[in-house]
Length: 191
Image 1: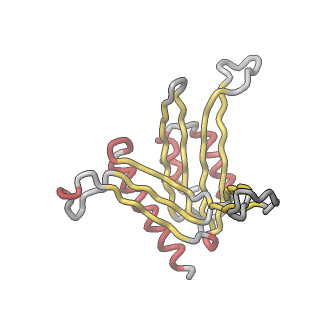
Image 2: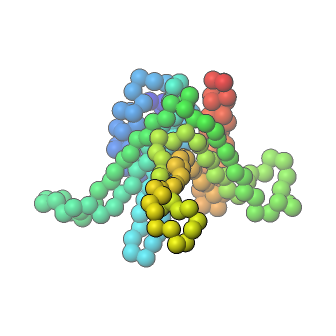
């Protein structure tokens, strides 16, 4: 595994041994061409939850590792009943249909060349997950009682990563810009 990826996972501080183990297994013997590590904490009424997303480009694949923590089952001899889960999503680079990078600037009038955006959102189309939304079909006649089957949509769940200058800092903004540039070159080169 690339040394800089290993360092980024350790710096994120979110179960680094677990994250490193999962990443090593997913990457295997491939070379890491680029990576992006994003750890965030979310708050709701009852709990604080931590998440980490790691994106890795190899020679053939885009890997997305997402880690969550939360309350787990009570295990005798283990305090807290806490657990973490790590999901690895693998997309062949040849299956990526598109990428989109949204640049949000809070003060566009004061923006100058070289300034960083306030937020960046990277969307990658070609995810392995899809959502199917179905509803009963109708012919438009409100009195009709015939079964017209179903109608619906299949929607791809794209990979989305959002970073904010205020919450994540300049280094995260630059890191996502760099990662996106490599990804765009890699998928553009296969055309």
